[in-house]
Image 1 (cartoon, one colour):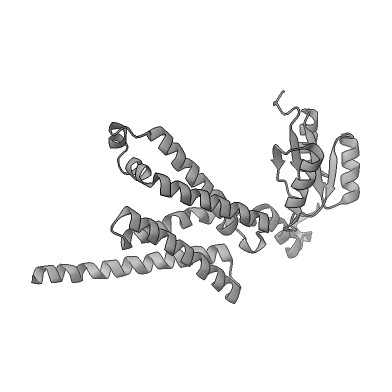
Image 2 (cartoon, rainbow, N blue to C red; image 1 turned 180 degrees about the vertical axis):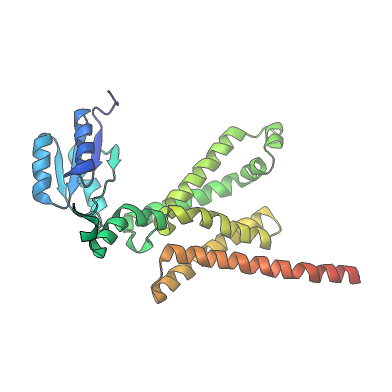
Length: 274
C-alpha cells in the first residue's frame, strides 16, 4: 500500500520496541526519513541499525519538558523538516498486573493520558507559551475584525445570505477560531475540560451583559479571572490546576445565575408598585 509518505520526514517517540518500533518500521518501508526516540540509548541505537542507516536515533525522556523541543530541532536539522509525528509513549514494563507498583503505573498514565485529558500548565515550556500567545493574539484579532459578520452569521444565517455576507467563509473562519481555541487551551485545562471553559464564561457573560460586545468582554474577563484564581488556588492548596480553573468558572456562573434569579422577583415587584 502506497500511503504517499515517500520523501516525508517522521518522528516517532518510544520507538525502541512495541507499537512505536512497528510504526517507525512501517514509515521506513513507505520511504519516509525517520527519527526515533527512546529512553534506552543502547536499545534505540540497535533498533535504528536494524531499520537502516538513514534512521536517526535520538535518546531522551519525553516527560522532560525540554525534550520535545530538542527532538524536533534535531530532526529538522538532520532531515530539513518534519511532516509526521507519532506521539507514542511507553507503558509499564512487562509482567503481571499485581506486580506493577503504583508509581510505575501512575507514570505511564501521566505520560499517555492525563496530561492531554486534564492539562498540566506547570509543565508548559517557553515554546508552548509562545504558541499559545500567538494563537490567542490571532483569535483576538480575528474577532475584532470580523465581529459584526460573525455575529450576523451566528444570529441569523438566512438573513446574512440575503444581506450578501460570505456565510460559507465566515463559518469556516468561526470553525478555525474554535479549533485554535481548543489547541491553545488543551495544555492548560485538557481536552475534557476545554469545552467547559469555552461555555461557562460565555454563559456568565450573557447573564451580565445587554449586548454582544458586553457579552464578549464579560466572557474574557471571567475567563481570565478564572484562570488566575485557579492557578493561585492550585498553587496554595496543591490542587489539579485544570480542574480548579473550571470549578471556579462554574462557581462564578452559579453565583451570577443565582443573583440574576433573585433580582427578577424584586424587579417584578417594583414594576407592579409603579
